Length: 129
Image 1 (tube, rainbow, N blue to C red):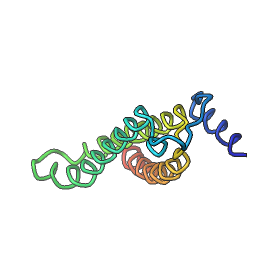
Image 2: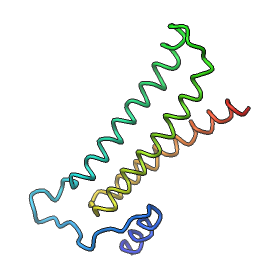
Image 3: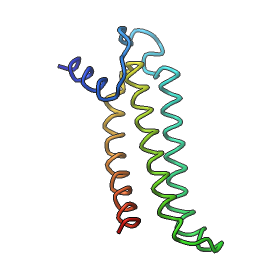
């Protein structure tokens, strides 16, 4: 059953997982492969920057320095789309490397994607009214 779900997710993410599964016998079995860890770290960094921009700079700093508020929504939309791309990139890395924690990350990524989808919808309704 899990192998079927793995192959379905791999097809949805357009990846081919390696034939060999990570084993739990080595000391590093609990650590993701370096490529997956890098992708995850990049995704977290983009998420952090997105939050700082969206919740601090756009609503507070731009009005203080006199930049028009009309720029806030397109900037917010752009950074949310970048965040979605980063999440998919890291998901693909976890599936490509067949990391054992990929399903746990998928749950967290899905929740984040739901929130970001709401933000994108809100931004699009502000832009196109």
